[in-house]
Image: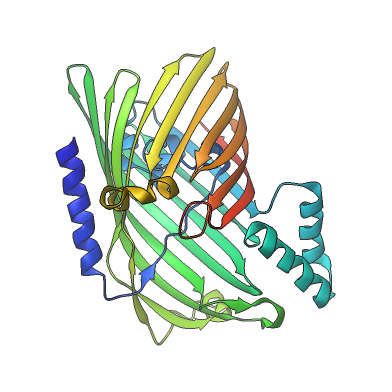
Length: 361
């Protein structure tokens, strides 16, 4: 297993050197409530619909899951009544001075203001995955705004191997995505009706493996292995009118990332418990253990009578809490979380709340 992880890391390092001369295009990741409630530990052992955007090895599950709709939204805001009211004031007021004052307060207290949303559907399980989603994330830096959006389509395959009591699952998927981002940072107070954006279409692949022995699991995945992407420059109106491709392209590359983790699942229909821990940049941690804390995501879930879930976790050293309710084919989840957006643990924490609802069979 160690040799396999080392080979994956070497491949990742090679791909990083290959794209070193081009700007990096960061991924746009949905911060769904189910994942954020367990400390963001959602890339190695995610199941069902989340497996489409996590480790493709999980598609080898014996059970299949059809998700007609999965919708998530999140806000980068401390979940207090006063802060929620301040956010509503920012959205409603026509007084620029009041808006600037409140935005600056958020910057000082929560290292930014913003939020995002995601929506998708798909099939996952029995060795096959097919789905699509759209994710948007936006946040402030000073009195400027950054927006990232991505429309994804994915197809994946996975195979289980049984060696006595050990099960090994291996999976691979391919994604096509349509990406539109703000071109730099937009000035909040002087934004025009059709601000500048960059836009392009790209291809990427993800691969992974999970080893199971009874209730225990270890796994690893490499995400965002992709070709170089030409991102043209234009305006939102150009994209909305489908005047594509945009002119004056700049070549970008994805930033492949290695995830590795361990977990365990216990129990049955009355009481079930799961615990997970993973690192979100295993190569960086392998090279420098001092960055472990900023890449560590761990959490636990307790499910009662297959309906009520309670979750808790550590997300880069910060506590996260969540809960969920499953009733027939309807599922709802909420979470409160804090994440690190600075260079090291404890540098720039940003808190948020997330809500998720899905229709799944």
